[in-house]
Amino acid sequence: MEQPYYWWYVYGQFSPGENNLPCTGEVIAYYFALSGLSTEELARRLQCTERYITMLKSVKNKKMPELLSRRILLAKVLQIPPVLLGLSSVTLASGDGTLQLASSSAGIEPLASGQMMQSYESLLALSWELYYTSSVQKAAQSIQQALEELNSDFAHASGLKRDQYDALRCRFYQLASVVARDRQDRAQALEYATQAVEIASRLNNAELLAAAYLRRARVYLGLQRYESAWQDASAALPYAELARDPLKGKCFQMAGEALSYVAGADRGRQQQSLRYFEEAARIARKGNLAPDGSFVRTDLTSIAIEKAQALTLFGRHDEALAALGVARKHLQPGMTRWQLNLLLAEAETYYAQGDLESCCYVLTDALRIAQALKLPTKVERIRRLYQQCQGRVPTYALRDLQQLITHSA
Image 1 (tube, one colour):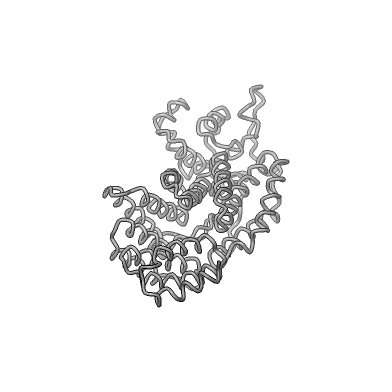
Image 2 (tube, helix red, strand yellow):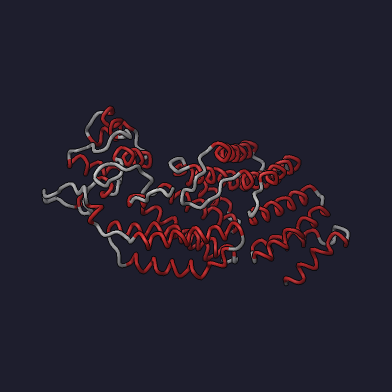
């Protein structure tokens, strides 16, 4: 059964409250967590008791604070969008004493049409499915056209409607970044990913922030800017704690991967990297992995693949191959990209072990998939490893791989 979509989801996944507003207690608890303030400090700023703050954050709280001045102050201190507390969009700036609760403001303020929103959601879902199973380039033109339309609509919108467009823009910029990354346009990929981070920061939406930092970290890894990737992966983690399980798990997975590239010989950082992977795996095994709108896939296969790559970097080759065995065991049919990533990780582990013949045989299978999916970044990665093997392995081990590479040139 399809779940209802509420207007406030642009800011966060809150339960319904009263008067077409989200649950006030959930809203306050959410923005309190984002603020980094202590209960004591918030009580001081609101000039109330800590017990009252606890009551405000309760999921049972549907309408406190009822006093308008306190509600306005709360929105200012915690940077809560006024409309979430039933305040008009001009409330925080007004000082003429005519302020009033706008409990029905969400109903009268212009909203983007549900049909239009659903069409964008459908395109996002289709495009990400293509990314995982074949090639997102098939939808590249539609994605670019949708982004242009959203940018135009955003420029002419205001209030809640403007934020609705902004949230969609954030998600489409993330998708466009992946499209650019897959075609090796890394500068464009970084530009789009940074746009997504900026929009998510403006909306102060924890799940959008976690997803945007996660995907920019992936771009930085492709650019071999490993410290920047680790900074973004670290920045995503506090927001991931407020996100639902699929995105939370993927953020821990990215933290493990990004840290592995900067850990070097530091055993402490290596172990921390592996702990991040273990936390991601725990969520994949026991968490609620219902789709959360981020379109990440937190699964044991991808976690094991990236853990194996980290173990290879740490020189723990036998453990890396064991992790790849786990990945292969959990590989689901149709997950073509995961299959390719598994083969690449396997080839790199064999190479690091000095088993160059096995490396070349696996690379041959990987190249067939990369060429079929038209993924130049993956083909480039295979080509680099092939060049490192040339002259160091028997000709028969290179023959098929060499033919494929020659035909793709």
